[in-house]
Image (tube, one colour):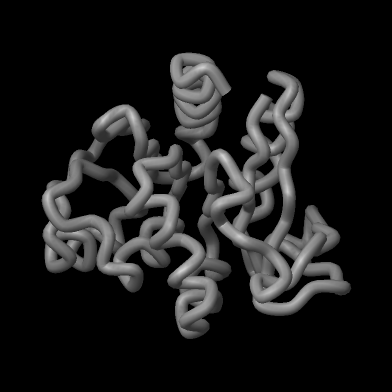
Length: 174
């Protein structure tokens, strides 16, 4: 079973964390929460979910994880100003490890300069940003690129997103 790093901080979109986490854990995977600093709790932008941060980014090595989850909301934008977080996310893209990003999640991958030549989707307000980063934007509920990068647009796409992230891990034997 996979050990999945989640890059998350305050103002994440509540369901874009809770729903994939539940799907991954139901499939037997372990989800570890990582922020700029550890030993704290963060709150979703809807105020419906709180998340205990397991580790600060300086306390973990991306090589110790099998996959990466990036929930949307304002969290990815708040995280991408920290070079350590950006480097952590970039590792997964460079190593072709599974990456799951929904809504504004791809913003972190834009900052990591990891989307050139990739097919992706995301929230409509970041479409131009994705295109400037060299990605081909697809307005679809879920898009799987190179059997590695799974992206979705909004919370309404969560059923398809969850299905594809669990399928990809199974397909890779994780």
